[in-house]
Amino acid sequence: MENADCILSPDGQLPACDERIVALLRYWRSIRPAGAAFPGRQHFDPVAIPRLLPWLWLMDVQRAPLRFRFRVMGTEQTAFIGDDPTGRWVDERFPKLLDKLTYKHFVACAERGAMTYQCPLPVAHVDKRYMSSERICLPMARNGRDIDMVLAMSIFHPTIEGNGAALPQPAAAATL
Image (cartoon, rainbow, N blue to C red; front, side):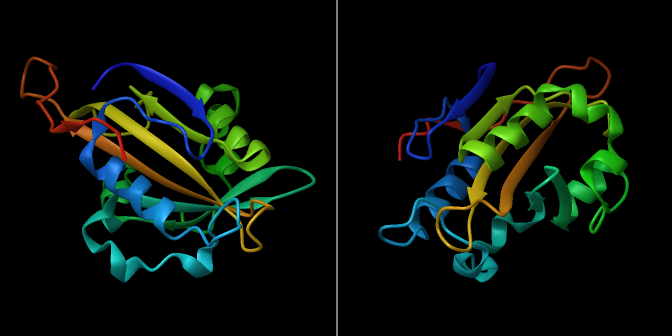
């Protein structure tokens, strides 16, 4: 995986990344209805991607003012951050996040319909055994155009005991 900070159109190409992120992007694109800019939550079927669910999370988008609330957090996500923030506002659970690039990615996704990808992620809020990480955020819209939810996946790669180096992970080109 290479260092990347990407804000892309929904049809943009990701850099080489974890194969689970590639699989989620492929699925997200496959559920977008014809003529719609984005799929909605009603198109998302967790049964279709069971192996990805532990790393997924959803955020509701509130407008005026723009805020994000955790709707669902996968089991791997809650294990890495040490609690389950489901139902909590992002700015209340992670107040320092508002000044970070990560939050700018959330905003780009919600306001511009951008697909965002970041690697490596800052991992200050997770167990230090996981030092290499990456994340994708994908816009979702019930009506196909007004984003009301963000579908995201974060992958935290473990480090080799004692030396802080990341274990090699299968990387895949994001050519879909």
